[in-house]
Image (cartoon, rainbow, N blue to C red; front, side):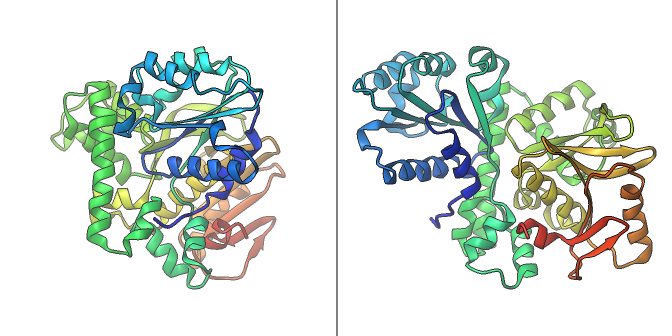
Length: 401
């Protein structure tokens, strides 16, 4: 498998090393969490950590099946913790497979000179029970599949960016797909395998949902409407009118389960003028464009909404809290917040048509504060500025230029 160093995530782990918090790495299945742990372990060994200081368990490996019983798990780790004052680094991969894993981790955490790193593929990892048990004791590192920058770096150079972007959105951002040499059939089978594992094992069985087909219909609807304002009522009404009868409470349960498995991301709204968060009419985005294409087929290739989805995920990677902006009757695609303030983004596949440019600028022009305002497009044009609004090529922005 081609090794991609996932530098940004690795940097986060290095920054948290030896700090008395449990490092929880979350993300969709096969996004690279296990590889990140291996990269970090290699990094520790290079920095002088001895092999006996590392305890590593992958709970999807049959070799460790006896450790799925929490008492066995605890005993196994406890007898391997060093007593000579050196730090013991504990790596527990896909730990959600262990019943009551929270209690075991909590017990190990309170021991001296133990540094714990855990991964999981669904938000049960951060359920209210875990948050209560580990309150103030953990930091979450939210992992996504490959960014466009990582995808380009894996190719070895930055030539033919437009072609690489097309490949990125048409194949997949899951790391292992890079080894499949653009073989559409193999990629589709691989993505179907991930999808079926998540839907059947992680969602349907865990939540005891009786109707897998209806769950899939909700996901298809959400994937088909990335970038559109949605409510659970609208989804229920539209699906019911199409002959798939479903109520709003069931839609809400399905959406929550899809978000817990990281197949779907919810973006809430923010009133820019009133500086308040709004509770209704959200947008949803897909974790991966290849997965979306598998579910929707060729009709999934709508350039504007795909770019909007890619930009949303990139803003999450860069550590922002991201919202849809509302200014009177206008909408700003994204309000990106961090401890430094806000940045406003409008996203459009192209603005070479004067009417389109005017429309996209209008939302940003209606904001009266001095935070940065950026219009991202796929137009291969020089950077422009319109009364303080920067128009930037989206591919350059995705590469961090």
